[in-house]
Each structure stands twice: as C-alpha cells, then as structure tokens.
Image 1 (cartoon, helix red, strand yellow):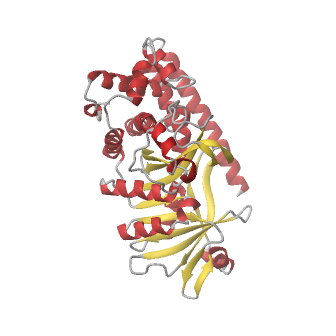
Image 2 (cartoon, one colour):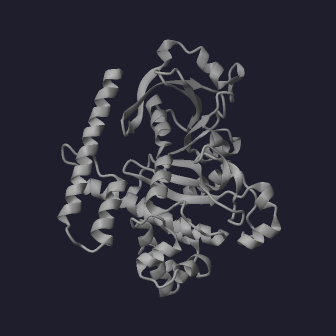
Image 3 (cartoon, one colour):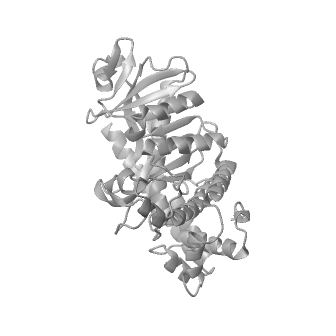
Length: 413
C-alpha cells in the first residue's frame, strides 16, 4: 500500500483502499463490497462503494505504481510480456461492456464482459501489470446512451482486442519495463499491426497462429501447415516448453525461416508437434538478432503464465467477482485486484529466495503463500504450529504426487 498510498488525497480513501486490498487477499467465499466491508468491521458497504465510484483518485496512476512495484522486485531483461483476454460471466445488460459474446472462460457464447490483460512473466515469478476493458462495437462503443449511463469517457473509442493489446504493450515499453519478448495466442498472432509495432520497437515475439495463415517465403506466400508437411526428420528437435504440474511439457519443434521484414530482424515460423497425437501448432516468431531454437521454445512456454495469472487472480483475489457497473468502478476494482495479486507474486518469490525448499517439498506456491498469509497475518495469531504443520503436510503430499507423475511420464516416453 505504501507504493501507491500517495495517490489518495484523503486519509479515509487510503484506509478504505487498504481495507479493500486486505479483503481481496482474505479467504472469504465471495468478494464484493458487502462481504469485504463486513470482514473489515464496517457497518455498511458505503465506504467501499464510495471508494470505487465517487472518491477522488486515478486508477491509471495506481496501475503505474503497481507496475513499478512489480518491476522493482521481479525485473528480468529476458522477461516476456504476455497478452490475453478473459471473460467474466455477468447477468443483465447494464454492466459496462456486457453483451452475449464468445469467451474462452466458458468455451462458448455467453452474456459476459471481456477484458485484455498484460502479464509480466519473469524468471522469479509472474503477475498482471495492466488491463483494458473491451467495448463491443455496436452494442456499446457506438451507443451514446449506454456509454453515458456507464460513465464511459468520450475519448474512448472502439478498439479490437489486438489493438488493446498493442496499447498495453507499448505503454509498458514506454515505461521502460525490462522485457525482450511478447507472447500471445492466435487472436494476437493474426494481427499485422501488432507485429509491425513490435518490429518497429525491436522487441521479439512468439505469437500463435492458425494452420491456415499464410507467410511470405522465397517461393511466395505459403500456408504454415503446408510448410510443415515437407520438413525432413532432422528438422525436428525434442525440447521442453517448461515444467508443468505433472512434469515437463515435451514436444518436438521445428523452425522455418520466412522473408517477412528482413530489414528489421529475423522472422520464422515455429512448429510444435505433439509426438503422441501428431497434432501440430504454429507460431510466427521474430527476433532482432539471431537466437537459438530453445529461446523461441522458452517464450512459447511462457505464454501459459497468463492463464495461471487468471486462475490465481480469480481464485485468490476476486478478479471476476466484482459487482460494479460503471467504467470508473471497473477500472478501480481491477487495479486494486492487480495490487493484491502483485503482493502475492512478489512475496512468494521473495520467500522462495530467502527459504529454499527442503528435500521432499515442492517450492512455495502463490496459493500456499496466500493460505499462510491469511492464517498467520489476517486472522488472530492462535495455534500457529497447526497451520504451519498443515502447510508442510500439503507440500509434502504435493511433492509425492508430482514425483509419481514424473515417473509415470518418463516410463511412457
């Protein structure tokens, strides 16, 4: 809280923001102004509702401070900026940005609100550092009555998800966030404007694309799946895309040079093959200087950190549990959620460094740190030995389970 407390002119707003962040960190079933106010000892939810809607403070300035806090503790020159969107299922039609639209959260078209997020994925940890709410073009962006009712600023215009992602990445780079790569899924890999912006910035990328996408080659434009058909066996190299909960994610990889923008660096198509099913996945890659194949594979594997950030953000800090309707309230809630999540990510990384895992234990996770923080700090200090003993038991049990998964995966391979 000290990193951004100066953004609140009044002491009441600072205290209410602190109460809201602590409530977001607490282990309560549903997180909204009512439940957090009750946890904080407030008589009504009015203080927190006033903080989100009418109090004088700038959520974007707090966002900048949260981003600086993350960089101060997790800075990594080889970090990856990962872009992705997630949807929050909502009822009704009055919440800003809500309409029936596809969301990967449900895997189908639902009444929901969609936002694009930017994750900072470094060697020591990862967390959300920026956000942009998506306004559907016909139902929101061009409807002045709905915009006015939801408090959408006049300066906000319709922007596609890749355009929002480009804005988030450029804002991070303008703020001197140390990073060398950008990663994203097919929604972002298909956008030429995002790729052009990264070329101009001399920032490498590994962006997923569909099998039907065409890329420029010496023989003309060719579909990426057609390029992969003629690869000789020696082109494939088996590498891990990173360790998962059940072992390393082993795939075979191949790299094919393209002729796109030779003036600014090297462009390739990266092909990933699941050796069990034969399924292929494709990525458009760029680097301002030559890099080995395993560097592209590392960045491709880091893309999943944004999914982990969504999972922990929703499960631990209430990313999708807000009950606010307006543009201002949404940005304020999400910004304080990002602050709470950044606290967990930073201090989990700090504890890992200060207290390396003993043999027989998995390393401390964000979920485990939040559990200990809740028990030992947010609740009265009683029976401290019990929660610590349960923590060791959980980590020992998870270690044994992971070892069995690793053994089974090795035998299969």
